[in-house]
Length: 226
Image (cartoon, rainbow, N blue to C red; front, side):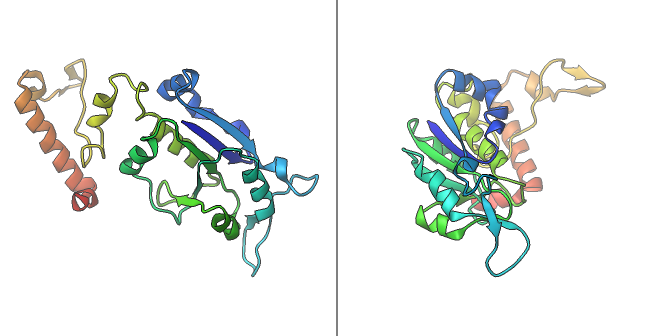
C-alpha cells in the first residue's frame, strides 16, 4: 500500500509512523509513502499557498492553483482524501475497506488554515473524511491516524495477525473488555477469579458480559448501530 501525502510540513513524516509495528512494516516494504511539499508549487518566491476568502471572513484559504499543481504532480494518485470535519467519520469498518487491497494507493491532502478552495474538491472528486468531532490545526495528524489504522490491519503487520485484531474495540461490535496480566495481585487489587480458572467457556461469557456492560454505559450509540 502506498500513500502520497500532500503537506506544507513534509518533515512531520513518517513521525510516529516510523516506530512500532507500523514502522517495522514500513521498513519491511509492506507500505510506503511520499511526502510532497505543497510549497514547492507556490505562486511566488515567498512560498505562499493561501489567500483571503472571497466574501470576507476570518482565516485564509489554500489556493486552487497551488493545490492543483501539487496534485497534478502525483503520477499515480489513486483515491484522493482530504481530511475535513465535513466528511463522514472514520470507523473501523471503513478502515477494513480501505485496507482490503494491499496494493491500493491513496493521496492524502493535508489542509491548513481555514481549509481548501471548494473547486479543488470538485475538480478531483476528492473524498472528505473526518477522524472525529473536533478541529485540528492541520491534516497531518489526521493523515497519521488514517495510515496507522489502515496499516495495522494489513497481513503480516501485527504479531498474531487477524487473531490479534479480532477481539479489539469496534471489531467486536462494541468496546473491549478489561485486560489483566501478571502479577495477579497488585496494590490490593486482584485479577478476577474467572480469568484464573482456566474455564474457557466461563471466561468467554465473562468477557462478553463485560463488553456489553461497558459499551452500554460508555457508547450506547454502538449498540444502536448493531
